[in-house]
Amino acid sequence: MTEGPQDDDVLLTARQARRAAREAKRQVKDLAYEQRRARKRSKDVQFWHGHHIVDADGLAQAFPDPETPEYDRGTVRRRITHGVTLVLLTAALVAGVVLAGMIQRGELEIKFAFAKPSAPAVTCPAVTLDYPKNDAVSVNVFNAGSTEGMAGVVAAELGKRGFHILTVENGSTKATAPAVVVSGPAGMAGAFSLQRNVAGSEYIQDDRKDASVDFIVTGEYQGLVDADKIDQTPGVLSCPRLSPPPADPSAVPPATDAPTVPPAN
Image 1 (cartoon, rainbow, N blue to C red):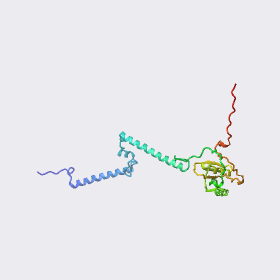
Image 2: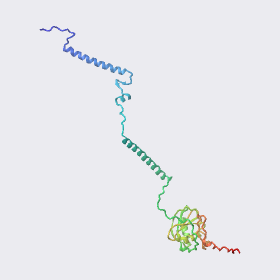
Image 3: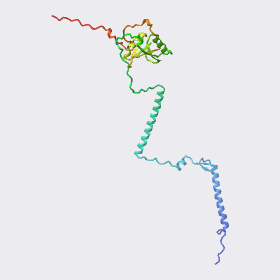
Image 4: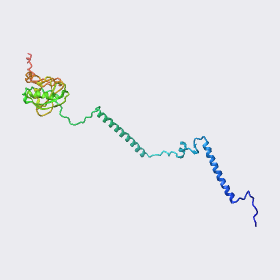
């Protein structure tokens, strides 16, 4: 059976089919090109030179925030403890830096409870002392004034009067007397003789065991008493900072018996 001729609008040759496919692709490309040109001409801020610009809202939609995790009570307590510990350590570090700065500037003084030496006597010795020979007194001379070489000058003057000089050095004292005489109980007689050689000197007793005497000259020092005017009669030590100064017991007259009242008849 022989097929009849087909209608040309329905039946296409292979060449025509390929041509139709190419035309369809071309139309798709043309349409995409026109769309790009339209976007370039558009005033929409989401497009720039045909490219889509992603703003914050777009990022939020593309990458949503994760949901807040819920921690158990143990984890929450540990985190709070770590935070408080960090704050306390930071505060301690800041306080240490501040204290170190105050100590360096001299605004704060820290005293440690070390064993303290025996304090000087709080009462002035009231015993009457004889004036000893000068060559029996061993003296350490210290300069607590501002005049350089004063200790050497005083030591030379005392040496001329027969005192035995042990040490000549710089020193210090808080007293304002012209000279300060320091000794232990064994050196009170020597301190007494030195006080008679310097008018207005002050005596301080310490806990030394030997009979040596410290003779400290200050900025108020005016010189020794003339050798021929020294009072060598017995007496007591002078302690001006002790108020009232103790009395010499040898100078106190003995108490007399009270008068007897005859009994009434």
